[in-house]
Image (cartoon, rainbow, N blue to C red; front, side):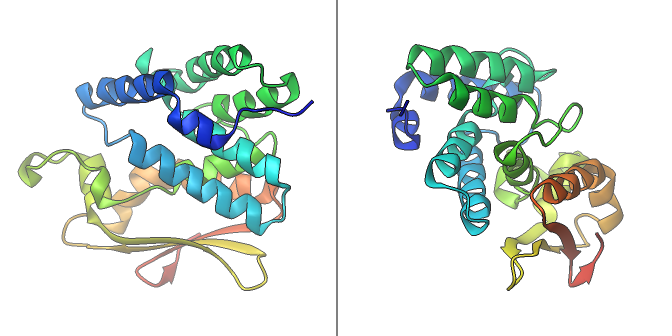
Length: 222
């Protein structure tokens, strides 16, 4: 059974816009970095890049992008267990749109397994979503305009001057290359926040049959 539910349709759905907007407002009120349209669209683009490069079929790529776009809507309920809340919300949304059950399962499994506290790469979509989400580290995610009051999350994201995720020539490795301003945040501080996430990316890469690498300021650290 084919589905009319496309990534383009999901992006243009006004109700989904409301959920994403309010979910981001909820995490903003708690002092978290940006989780709005810029984030979910970047994650969707990364998922598309990974799955396309590994020659997954067109519909699998699209389902991955749909999962990426919806993955943080659970924050509107609560930051705690937002992956599971988001999966339940996505189920209701997609079921009401008559998406086939097999496709819904793929999407909600990915959403429900993207947060590092409970995440597991269960299928190619979930593995790509984990990597797409956890590698979105950039200065523009910091909302706080006052550097004097930065917490460690602000410092680490703001310190990233450049972030590139790219495959090796033979597509056996996926490499996250970061340039970090050590005057703002040290590499050690980066690891204090992101080590668990990077190890999760490594597991997700293994699920996809590739090696995940991390390079910071030209040095390979994972």
